[in-house]
Image 1 (cartoon, rainbow, N blue to C red):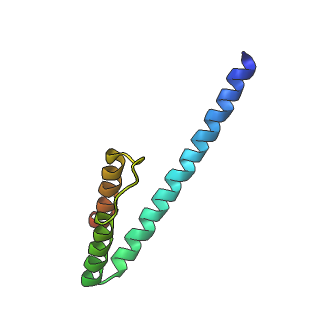
Image 2 (spheres, one colour):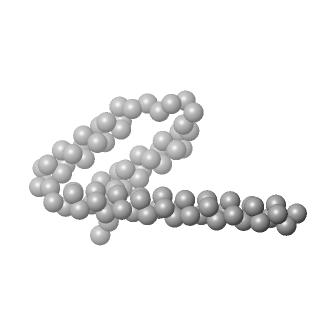
Length: 86
């Protein structure tokens, strides 16, 4: 029983480490995208945003992707493009 608990704790720690790494990657990408958008002139920035949003609108997700997940992705992309980090 102790071995099982120890093994579960190790697996939990590994998952937590993976989660932290993913959060760091997402935050790094947010910083990069925000910096790039801020360096662009307003017309170029708007054209890029419209192009990305148009590309997302034209994509139909696989049947194994839930509507909720699709909407969540679209919300995050829109937030990142329209309301970047301060």
